[in-house]
Image 1: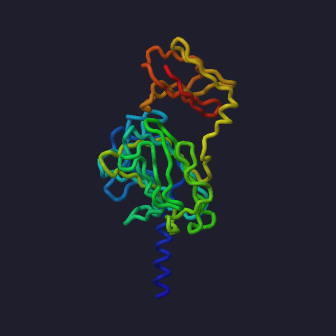
Image 2: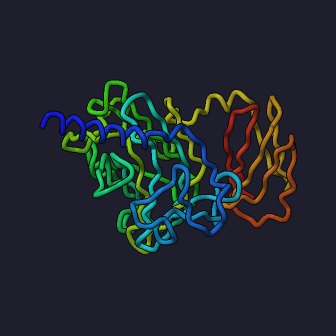
Image 3: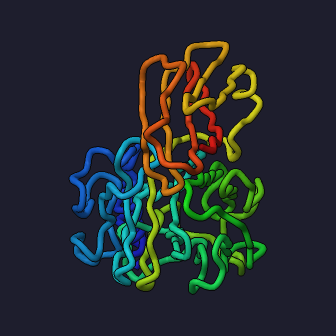
Amino acid sequence: MKKYYFLVALFAFAMLSMNAQIDPFEDDMESYPVGQPISQDWWTDWGCGGGAGCAIISSAAYAFDGSQSGLIPGDGTTDAVLDLGNKIFDVWGLAFYMYIPAGKEGYFNLQGEVPIGAGEWAVGNIYFNQDGLAPGQGVIDDAVGAPVNFTYPEDTWFRIVMNWNIENGISLSEWEMSVANAIVIPEGTPYTKADGTPPTSLGGIDFYSGNTNHEFYMDTFDYQDDYIDLLLSTDDFSSTGFRSALNNNILTLQANEEISKISIYNMLGQEVYASSTNTSSINMSSYASGTYIVKVNIEGTEGTVKIVK
């Protein structure tokens, strides 16, 4: 009998190890055919078949960087999973950008094992505008300190960062999280459900469409075997000496070093201008009146400014 249990345990560990081959990755969502479901590499699903109405969809409607993002549509069935590799040791960090149109809802939870069977909620649910009753507000309903409330901006891209410290084993693991450059889960928080139950591993993230009002987009995923800064630094960007001015429809950009990349987004999150060459002035006379977000890269340091035309 002891031999039987040993073999079962060995098999379970082998299966876990096989699935733990997900290495650190970056995904700008640009390589997938627009309008098609994504079921490859680190993208999988809750066992619903991987096609439309199940897997995350490649979309050109909005993008944080480039021209595409991943969409969870309001079909009430899409159940996409980002596989994080069933990690049971080391330090891991994940950052990505999220966009939720005004009045729409978003949702994800953290799972303890992938492939997903019956489901093992490690933390969550994590709601954005739950039931359409709280635009710009979110809540984590099952984590240490729950309910954990936070805010997020509608109709614009915002950054989500999560770090996990599993160096002392999964049962003693800790995590932290930020949303829209604000700390939501502080450093050192036990990575457990509200009742203290730890997960089997750092399995993956389930992005689910719960009803017809769910619609959210994700872009620029960065998964590392190291911590990722929870907050974007303003000090580093300030040191670049960057300044901007809009006069007579001409946007002038200046910095101490060369500006290597410029992107301009309207308030729908759509990229209306992009340049990867050193540019000091942009003619905005053909642009509609309104607010624009200008994103620049200066010698590897990124920052954004808001321009009103």
